[in-house]
Length: 561
Image (cartoon, rainbow, N blue to C red; front, side, top):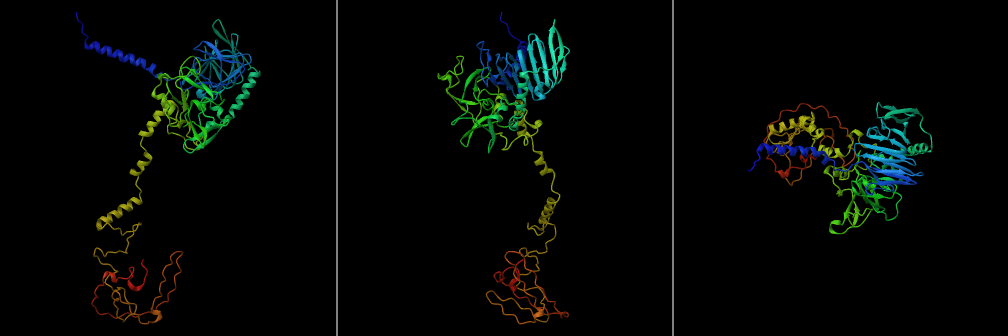
């Protein structure tokens, strides 16, 4: 008997498929490795790290990245310093610390034995930290300096500065200068109050913390949450690049030094091959930003300021590939290397990792380097307030969308909706006068006053300054006939001598440059009787255009206005 699936059954199967895909979405989103990591900043004496892959304790090395699942142990004479962004952890001898969780949201650490000093520098990070022992869980309430000891089956929680909360059972806070002794009695938490221990470990932790607080110059250019940034001021100097802005130069390097040459590639979960540099400053410059050459030297380019930068195992491009049968053994563990060579990425080279990732993860690494550099001189006094800075990896894409999509109201709206009440009205009034006249010529001054010095000869309208070869102005000598102007090419006859008082003083030509000469005084002419009426005379024929003298004043020699 043949069975047939109904449309209802197909629809139900499709709905189940969508439901399973929706439930699996969080797992897909967790494919990105964590953006926040720790590092082993300093070690003295015997310090070991537990390798989960081989199940053995191996000698620890400086600048080894730390993530969830790592364990650090010190011997009787050993000391270790760990850094997670701006947070510092110091281990005394005979101590063991395990990293239970370390990602962008939480930092959970477990102290198995020994003594631990915890320095938290921001309240935001304090809310994300949790310290655990077999007896109790502790959480800092604000930035401060704390100490936790575990001896036998008892936990001693002290506060040098700040408030530490006991998160188990009813819970209570441990204030500055207090110590709480915590233990379990048949499963119930007990505590007793005391004073913080005053020993060599406390003196060393307080002294080193005071030294760290003085090294803050790098915070002008990079976020203190960049793991390893605290060592930059001690081992290098900052400069200003004309294109990339703030750059950092290492000082203690040999001639011919190049990045990614003094260290090794180690296999670190979940990134795979990760660069471990031997220099004490060799963490931040090799896992954030880019490298560039300037004036014959290598400089580190951190890029734009990001409050929570994203860690990368090594910002290089690989040459060669194991897929074609060419590989080398590096680091250990019998794993083939990713290539036969590597070259540091320049500031605008894209980063292409070999581990599993999403485009969002790549954008958080390449975003600060791709053309969005801070201007030269960028620093704490120049940058935007913390609320207006980019807040980390998730905000980079949204910030770029806002830059592309939003409209600049401060420029466009002012041009369209707020006209200039002075300039635009005058311009409209002049345009109206042009339309009435029809010739498109302006005859009005900028202040709106009528210009009486018109030149209407082209359109045939009367002009007080006629071109008929005659001077229309009245002759100041009454009773004498007016003389016509000489024809073209003829010399004008010399005028008859007249009494000096009746002739106006000649006006000197204005100088080419400099100030105008002082006006010459004119003699007052005597009173004249009214002239008798003159007879009409016939106008002389108009002279050709060539007969007109220079300027508008004819042959009288007056300078052209």
